[in-house]
Image (cartoon, rainbow, N blue to C red):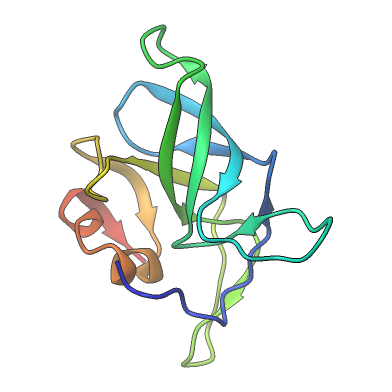
Length: 132
């Protein structure tokens, strides 16, 4: 895992809903914590593309529903700027469930994955269909 690019906006805060983009059985996730967030008093933790968050499964199969997992955010609706000057935004907020070794639990990822998330977690690129 590499460091997060400081230029990426972090619009997803505690309580935000995410789409689960892999085939682990989860459909909708809710952020309950952001790993590595260092804020100030009364500030809500927030994350963006490439951030590791702890999520609970809101919708999904009975096996994974109400479970807590570590996830990596791979898409966000809020636009962000890349170093070459291009602005990027996606249709939805999405995440991928990872295991303790920071490898994705699912065998494939639906939809595009941001290049910044792939740069930070290289194992995601092995199961991603599109890297944008």
